[in-house]
Image 1 (tube, helix red, strand yellow):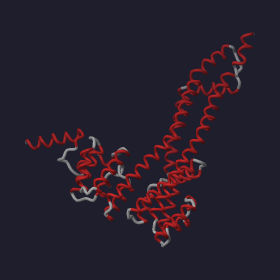
Image 2 (tube, rainbow, N blue to C red):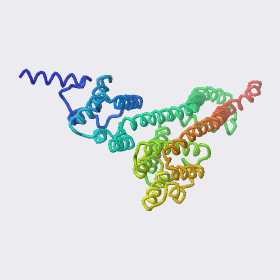
Image 3 (cartoon, rainbow, N blue to C red):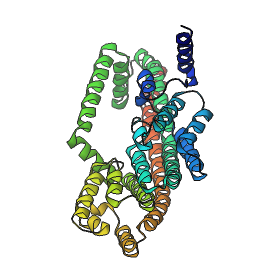
Image 4 (cartoon, helix red, strand yellow):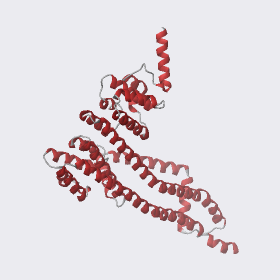
Length: 387
């Protein structure tokens, strides 16, 4: 009886965030839903870096996992690492243990760990993986920072427009009505739009139409035809398309450099890249490259002969061909990724240089149009008052 009470207390302690040492393995996942949980990128980077350093220092994998788990703050990731450590101690491979958490550890992550298990170079692989994850985080931050200013400007413009239409315009409308002013066409259009926004039935209809259109667009975008068209626009739109292509090339070459340098086969590397490009046309390109390599072609020739090979610059293909001939494909891929990372930063700056003036012109045009529509009748008021 005393033992049962102690066990219950221990379980309560774990639910409170302490990760009880009496509960191991999958039971912990099933009980708390950890297999569908997500964690912050920063936590994952710290985990990979610490594990790499410990393994490189000669610490046994299970002991390294225990040490990392003890250092973590109570929460989801602590419970995840605790469960992984338990599975490793019971005889599971680390890659198989990580596969139980697909929302935390990506297919690329698991594939690289599996390859490191086969090659016996896990510490080195995890170190490179940590650098790659940090690169991905920094790239996302750069893109978000590039879009922050336009988003703020758009929000300010929306608020200013709403204030002018919903509060300022009705006051002017009363003045016009009292003086029986004949309103210009632009002002009448703006007044009609304001009245529509203030009409409950009209707004209900508009919002319903927007929701239905948004739902239809979502399902269309999720279809094969929709994804194919949207992904085509992503890579072909001027300026923005260049930024997206640079991002995909940078990511692909960095993954190739990482995996080839740590002993992963080229076909396994391409399989991982194909799952991370997040674009239909790049996925099709790598599928064809995979097929041609299996038919005996070199990587560089496979890219140039595949449909969509024009997405990869001829200079990259030449560098890859030189890397294949010299047996330094991983090193060449790394140099390409470094070059394209700089090119990506330049592309982001180009996007910003284009978006800022466009936003200024667009916002100025909207607010200026409203202001003109409000002021056109004002020019007649002095004449009407004098009558």
